Structure formats: C-alpha cells, structure tokens
Length: 280
Image 1 (cartoon, one colour):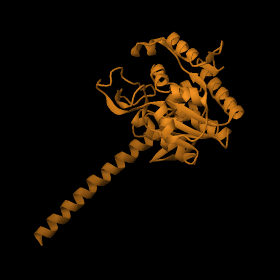
Image 2 (cartoon, helix red, strand yellow):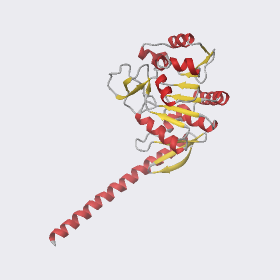
Image 3 (cartoon, helix red, strand yellow):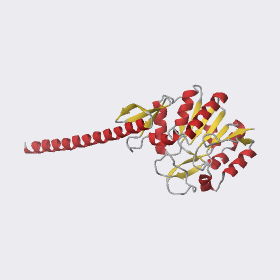
Image 4 (spheres, helix red, strand yellow):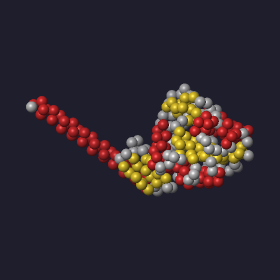
C-alpha cells in the first residue's frame, strides 16, 4: 500500500510539473501570437489564421506563414518585399507571364511571394520555385499548401550552381541566406544543381520567364544553364549587385557579356532594381 501511495504521489507531482510546463508554453505562444498580430497590423497586413501551430497574413490575396517557433514572422521579410522595388517587380513578372504564357522559374523563391502571386493572377501557369535554405524551403512549402497550389507550384530544395555537386550555404535562418564561395566551406551542405539538369528532370513546358535573386550566384547559375537559354529563350529578371557577385569572382559586366553572347539584350531601365534581359 505504501508503495502504491508513493507511486500516486509521484504521478501527481509529475502531472503538476506537466501542467505547469503546458501553462508556460501556452503563455509563451500567446505572447508570440500577440507580437505577430501587432506586427501584422503595424505593416498593414490582416491576420487571417492564428493558431498555436501557425499564423498567416493576407498579402495581396495570398496567405503567407509566420514562424511562431523562432518568433520570426514572415512579416519581417515583407518589410522590404512590400517596398516600391518589390511591388514593381511583382507587377512586371505577372504582366510578362500573362503575355507570354509558358512556365515560370522563380529561383531564390524565399517564402514564395512571387510564385504565389503569379499563380494567383495567371490561373493556367505552372511554376517551379527553387529555394536553397532548408529552413526557408519548409516555409515555402507551407505557403504553397496553405494556398492550395500544390498542383501548380513545384518547390525544389537545392541551389542553382554551375556544376552538379554538393555545396555549402550560410547557416542562419534569414531572408538573405547565400551560397558560400567554396563548396568545401563550413555551413549547411545542400545539393548544387545546374539549371540545365533541373529543367530536363522536372520541366516539360517552355520556360517563358525566369527570375533569379540568389545573392551573387547568378553568373554561376547562367553558366550551368546555357542549354536552357538557347532552347527556351526565357525573359530573364536578374538581381545583379557587384558586391555579391564578387564573392564568386564575377561582375555584372561579365553577366552582360555572357548573355550578349547568347543573344540577349539588356533593357536600358531597371525594374524594381532588377536587370531585365530579353532574347533578340
């Protein structure tokens, strides 16, 4: 009997600890949710779904997830994506896709903003969203599922590179994860894929528009995608900044020369800070 009483006391004690832990966990979730709602309101977004498992904000009619575990809501990334430059890029991409049809390759898709907006505005469009960061890729997949676009958006977790090999990327979970210049550098190891191989493996449609924002690895992507440039002739929307390209020994002028050799002409004006190259 004494043993039973001792066991009962132990169970009650453990239950009290468990209840306390659950209470503290709920309080923490509540604080995070409150912060998320305040952030959403501050930047003009309407919280549409809020649960302990996740929260979403409505951006231009698409749902974007907020990370409650890291207390790193997607809203922080939207601070720059809602700026003039990103809004102009959104409109240009959607307009080009509506005019040209075909498939859209969103390289450096991040949490999927451009992919989701393109899918929403061009109902017949097929989209391939490439994101290197495993952390950000999970959020991208979650956003695709939340918007019920699994049949039209194909997320791919890899980095676009000039060769087929394992490479390293920075470890921090931020909106600016980038490839490390040496494949042997310390960091998260992920597959480096060439654009040519990915397109042969996954894409049956003609690529009409390709957008790439991959923090300086744009030239590496192009070197691994010359077959795609020659066969598909997509409109290219590239973020080219010499301070990032220099990590890989490249410059924006090198990119212009390579694309000129492939029969592309650069637009004289930027679109949202991005360079546009059209096939001649």
